[in-house]
View 1: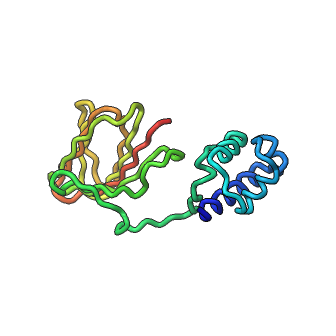
View 2: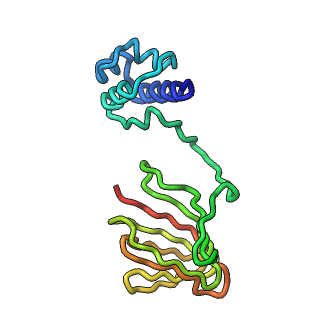
Length: 184
């Protein structure tokens, strides 16, 4: 429990500083006493869920912005750390490097498709788009009965809110980067 209190303390202090608010002003906006705000910022108090909600609502911020560990400015992800997912008897491999994040609205993958590998994908949510760049090999994408072959160094963007397929139509391994964007 102590660690969450320290996270809340750092987050609240940082948010208050960024908004240039005094303890008095935060107390006025949130209905939480100045003394309690100070204790929370110093990590001397374990605020209740109700208190955290009062602070979040008063400061017009999300509840999770107070309780989540801040993400570092830079993060290196080793391929060996990423859980590989596969389809088509292992011929289609996906590496989810950056999973979906509500604030960023996208996810990012590296994909490897062996010669002849194929994947049929269902429609994603309304307005979803995919951005693909092929770095090695050749990829054929079919969307709405329209087929597009993308070669090494080429990119494609398409509406992924309809069924689509990926096929390694070339003679060797295909490697690509895929970003899926989800509208709010």
